[in-house]
Image (cartoon, helix red, strand yellow):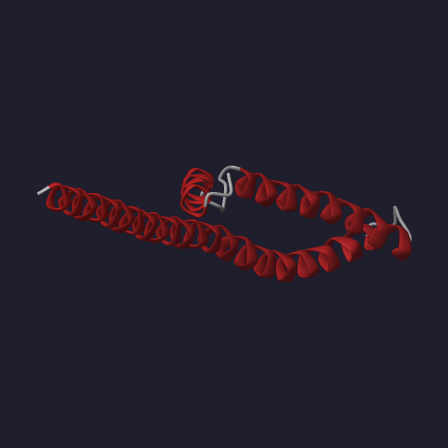
Length: 134
């Protein structure tokens, strides 16, 4: 009879351990799924921030070239500046505007974190616990 009790205890312990391992595996799978979802969402945010910047840069470049040529020749024809001075003035003006646009784009990227920190940390902690390397 004592042997039966011990055998039942071993069976219960192994059942509990297998349940714990199955639950840990389920938790790990859920965290991986959450991590992938957050990365995908942050990637979409990044893509949505890049497209307007690229479109604006392309259209702005064409407009800047045409306007700068117009302004260069306007300054030159008014007789106030030589042709090379007119090019320098207009080029400097557009360089300042371009730097401002780049700065605005960088600030937009800094407004969010493209990597899901909390999910990654939770996933890392669980992997460490499961592998006993903590």
